[in-house]
Length: 411
Image (cartoon, rainbow, N blue to C red; front, side):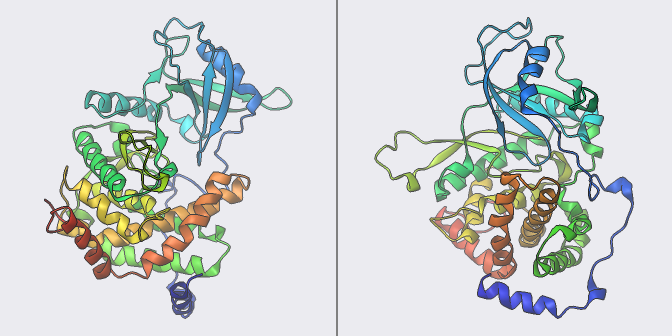
């Protein structure tokens, strides 16, 4: 723990137990309950069987992709496919996706996902293409059997063409790359403004940043009392600073998970003579709309800045937001109220990730992908919390001036 974190920890320890926030227990507002296992229990040996049964594909090889709640498999298949609905063979392969137990009970959810992908492609935003199964359907509900050959659970299966590109986390977070990611986020938000879906509009999402106080239901999963207490303090800050101004914020259907593993990039031009750690990239696509919900546009920006603040080896992680905002502001604008609450929202997102990652590990302790989130985001939580709003804004404004911008609101 850093010296600043130690000081903050000592300050928090002095708070009394009666300051812990009490939550509304309305179950209709909580998507996930403590000790609820929803990730599909799916033996690897059955992936080939389902690919053949549902899509007429003979799998040559496959690997499981990272995921919190679902199961996703990148599969490479034989070019000879027994499926009349597949006209164009994808040389890069396909992604067989298995929804978690909760979402598999709501077919409207997967249909909404497919609708947004089609909408974005019409807007010239690169998005994945859904693959029809042998019955011409976009998804199907399938029972998965246990060792006794009895149906254990039923999950929704669907497939998409694999989208080429490298995830952002595999590339250095240099200023140009962060600027381009911010610019793409602005384009994406503009494209979503005229999209509507009745199901997503009413959906209650576990990762909705505007509902972040509900993470306190899961704070028991944190092994560190200091972090648990810090999360309580951050949520108090949200209730004090953000909640009163929610009525002044713009609200649309947002992506909800603009993180370093959902943004696909490629290197710009020929950079063979440039050291790996200095190569710049542009965004070529966005994946994973499974946390999409109706919320405030500024929360998507807070989520993006949070996740792109990690792994910043060529700059201070607090400066990542400045370059992202510079790119974003070339496509869209922010209001004074949105900027004013941005730091608190970033702290809330980090706390959200740390808490829910810790909880997920209690249910799935071997999930290395989730474990990496805990290790990387805990230090970031202290760093942002120990940085004042004024200091953060000054850093960002200094960076914006390098791009010829005068303020944090528009160009």
